[in-house]
Structure formats: structure tokens, C-alpha cells
Amino acid sequence: MSEHDFSQISPVFFLQTFILELMHACEQEGGGYCESLIERIAKSAGVYFEQTYRDEFQKQEELGCADYIDLILALKNRIGGNFSLASVETGTITVVNSRCPFGEGVTNFPELCRMTSSVFGGIAARNFGYAKVEIRQSIAKKNGSCEVCIHTNLDSAAAKPGLEYRREDQKEDKLEIVALHSRIEERMRNVWWSKPKQYAAKPAPVIIAKSPAMQKILQQVEIVAPTRATVLINGATGVGKELIARAVHAMSERGHRAFVAINCGAIPESLIESALFGHEKGAFTGAVEVHQGFFERAEGGTLFLDEVDTLSPAAQTGLLRVLQEGEMERVGGKHTLSVDVRIIAASNRQLEQHVEQGLFRQDLYYRLNVVRLSIPPLVQRPEDLPHLVQLILKRLNDKYAKNVQSVSREIMQQIRGYNWPGNVRELENTLERSVLFCKGSELTQLDLDKKTTTTTVDWNEYKQQILAEAEQAFLKQTMQSCRGDVKQVAAAMSLTPRAVYGKLQKYSISPNEFRT
Image 1 (cartoon, helix red, strand yellow):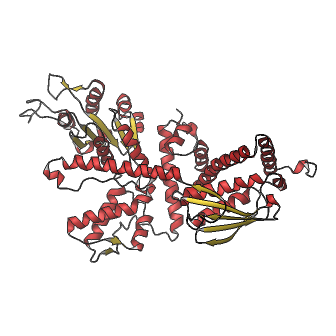
Image 2: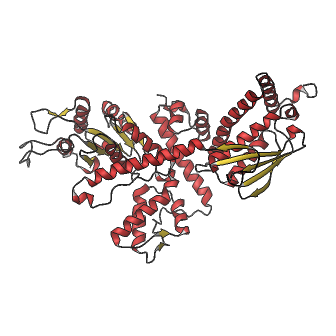
Image 3: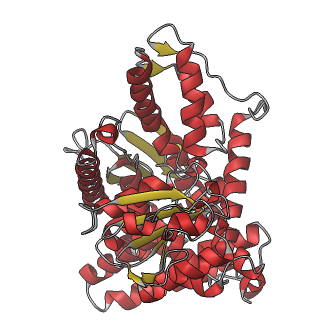
């Protein structure tokens, strides 16, 4: 320490000294233990550094080569290094460095180079699937400078020295997701084909789940479907809430029984009780015979109540009784009927706000909100877009005897650049209008609503603005539902609590606002 002025001690110098002393202590346990500890710390830290970078620059998809280079150079330089890009070749990125972030003391602990290797390699493997980090020169070994090569091609890296990093866990997870997706789709097709011919003639429902957000929903479906738990599905109009409800039904033991879907908002308030619970002959003017309601028609199966927030107070009371006691009475009836129906409710609004405003029964809300599935809007599912486009084109070709096989690059750019406030439903309607007037096999004109189409010149800036708005809205919604519990919010958003606090600070949101 004698060569340093105490008044000049900085956070970077403090951490450098701390790391070096930690390595010195680890030496006592043997070199293998020291290297193992370094690698474990570096891999974990690398995950955090990558997530911090993604949060700041709104990166959701896998990082490309340019983003990866920007991340690793900025990371090392901000902690005291002097890294720069030397070359980029097919499958290999080479960076050089003239100043070590760990200071001159690194020459006593060349094992610390493994920290750079593990950070660089771990991030590369997560985004490219594979990485081998070759440290050709090292300041720690008194070469005067560092030269590090990150090889991302397994075949070309085979003959190179260095430490390997693989995304085996993510590969396994991806295979599991593919298998899960296949199981759900198969069950949904079997349920669909078992329906009467007038339904089976229509295309079976298909879930597109290439995005992590939708894959998480599928995982939740598989867990909750076999249980008897009531499910509440939240999501904006057009995101596919009924589709997810059908998946829950298909994956349950009730899959061979009826699935009855009704839109509560489309039924007049004066008729909703009769529609749900049925009525007896003479119950009211025009009731000339006994009428079985939706609950009776769904006996043994699943009843999907969309726009459940629009139910009248009387209908809410009847629904609560079914959920609590498993029984009901027809309108005008004197006999209690037992009901064996699983309820899946859905709303495009936050029911908590309706409860606070006295528009929805609190006890009913708690009965419905046993398991909540939140379907993300299409703007948060960019990976799903090209697959949705292909699925919709196929169905439109069958419907109109067309042969539109693809969309042009410019059209796909337009599709990706639009925020789709109407979600999948709006995408379907837009493509349908466009396909009708398409004369070739490639769609080159997109009939978007001119009032809502963006005219901004800088598409990247506009995209970041839309993503930020969506993230802010989702964060507030999740904070509301979790009553300001940051740990619960972090779990719901698949982030660390630290990342959530960073976002709260970014959008000037106080957790205390939601802790009432």
C-alpha cells in the first residue's frame, strides 16, 4: 500500500485489493479450489452484468455479435481496463488490452485471468450456444498486454486451446419446451377433433409460443391444468385468453368433457343470470319451458367466463355460491342443483381496481384469483410474430383459396415495427385485408390503419419508446398485483430484485405507492 496515496484510494482500487486478498486466502486451499471459486463467481457475475446491459439498452432477444462486443468491452473498461477490439472473423472475436482491471498485483495471481475468461465465455455461450476463450497473451503472465480470442464456432474451435463454455442447460430447457408445446397441441387437437362435425371442420386452435413470455405461460398451464384450481387469465383484448383456457382444459382430466366459452360482456344484464344458471318454466314472461344454463351444459367439464368483470351483482352472487358450495338454483327455481364445473375466468382489466371501486365483489375476486395467468401483449412477444404471420397466411389461403406463401422483407419490418394495440386479433384482421388484394405469392402491401401507423423516421428510437412504455405499464400492473412486494415482482418478471429496483428508479415508481 506504501506506493499509493491514501487520499487517492478509489472504489476500483478497493475492489482490486479485496479480490487479490481473497485470492491469497484461497491459495491456502489449493490452486484447484481457487480456480473453481473464481469461475463460479465470474459466471454468476456475468449473468448479472448481461442482465444489467439488457435492462439499460432494452435487449430482450439473444445478443448479436455487435452487442456482445459492446458489452464485454464496456464492462472491462468501466472497471479499469483498456480493452479494444482487434478483429472480428467468422466464429472468432479478438480483443486486446493494455491495462488490467485488477491492477499490477495481478502478476501474483495469474488465475484471475480465468475470471475474464468465465465472464466472456459465459455470456457468449448463453447467446451463441457455445464459446471457447483462448488467452494468447496476458499481463498477469508479464506479456505486457493481453490478447483474448472468443471462438463461437464449435468445429473451428476444436483445435484451439482454451476454456470451453456451453449452453447445455438452456438446450435442455429448449428441448423440454418443445416437448411441452407438442404435448399441449396434441391434447388440444384431440379435444377439438372429438367435437361435433360443424366444429371439427374448422382448423384446430394452435398456440404460438416461440417467445420466452409465452413459453412461461405453457409451463404454468402444465402445472395448473391437472389440478382443480380456479384460474384467472389476465390480458389485453386479442392476446388469446380463450386459447390458453382451452389449453388448460385440454391438459386436465376434464379434457374429454365439455368446454363451454361465453363472453359475459355480450349478454344483456337482464339475461345473464338466466344464461348462466338457467330458468324454470314461468320464471318470467316468455319463460315457456325449462332452460338449462351454461353451468349445466358444462357439467363435468370447464366453463370459460370471458370479461367476467362485466357480471351483474346478482350474477356475481350466484357465481360465488357455485365456487364456494358447488351448487346453484335456476332462476325461478326452488330446488338446489349440484354443479361440477371448473371455472376459468378472464378479464382485460385489473379486477383489483374494480374491487376498490365497489364494482366487483372482493370475496368473489379472491375465489377467482386462485391461480393467475397473465398473457403478455404482442408487443412483448416479438419472437412470435413471424410464426403467427405464417400460421395466419396458411389459414387465409385455405379460407379464400389464395396462394400467399410469404411476406416481403419490407412488410415483415412493418409488422415488427407496429405496436399492435389489438394484438393477435388485429394482426389477423390486417393480414386478412391485405391477403384479399394480394395477386402474387408474396405479400408486398400491408393494409395497416393509417391513423395508428407510426411515421417516425428513427425506427429504433420508436421501438425503444414502445418497449419502455409497455415495460413501465407491466411493472406498475405487477407492482399493483403483488402489493409492492419487490421479490414477488422480480419472480413474476424473471428478474433479480436488484434489476426490479433499477427499473423502479428508472421510471420514478415508488413501491410504497402499492403497499396499502
